[in-house]
Length: 292
Picture (cartoon, rainbow, N blue to C red):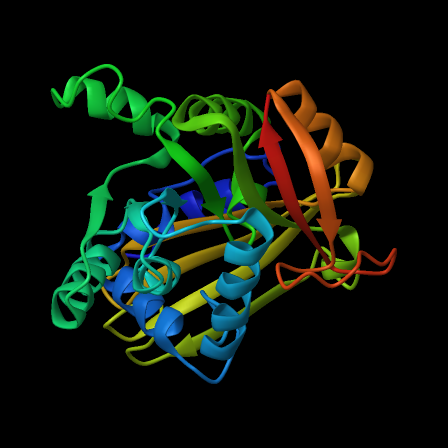
C-alpha cells in the first residue's frame, strides 16, 4: 500500500542539513551502483576520470613535497582510486570510508597489485577516537600523517557542526606543519539550480533492484549557499526510501575563514586540484592548507 502521508512529510522543505533515512552509501543496492559510478572511466560521477586523478595525485605529491615512506591519510577514500596511486609512489597510505562495498573492492585491488594500504571501514568524522577505542593506542593516529586528503567535494556535504568536528579530527591526525588538501564547490557549480520537482518510473536501476518510482526534488537556501537534492524512492511493494544529498557552497573568503578557525593556515587556492590558478567564475576551489 502506498504511504502517501510519508511522501507528503518529506516533500515539505527541511531545515538545512536535516537528515532523512540512511546515508546513500549504506543502502545495499545503491552502494553497488555508486561503486560502478566511481569506476566509470568515461565521466566525472562519483569520482573523477582516471587521467584527472593521475594528474591530481602527481600535482599533490609535487606541491606538498611528499617523499616515499611519508604517511598520507585519504578520508572518504571510496574504492581507493587515490590511495592506489599514492601507495604506488611509495607513500604509506591509510584510507578511510564508510562504504563496505567500496572498501571490499579497494582491498581486493590493492592485494592484486601488491600494494600495502591500510583501509579502515568507519566514519571518518570519528577517525582518531575510533582508533583509540580499538586499542591501537592514544597516539597511533595523532600527529602521524604528513598530509590528509578530502577530495571531490566531500567537505561540502557536511553540516557546519560536522565540518567543525572534521577539522578537529584532521588537525589531530597531522604532524606539525602537516598539509590538508581538499576541494569545495562554489555557487557557480550550481547556479542553474531551482526548486524543481520531477518524477519518473523505472524498472530495476540505480535506486532499486525492483520496478520503482522516483520523486526528485531540489531545495535551495540561497542566503546560506546551501542546496539539497532529495530522492524519494517508492518500490513496487510500496516501500518508501528517502535520500538527501546536501551541498554547502563556499566563497574563497568563507572557506579560508572556516579553515583558519579550525587551526589551519591557507597556503594556496586553485580552481582545481591540478594547480590551475583560481578564477572568480570557477565552480570549484582547490585548497592546500597547513596545520598550525
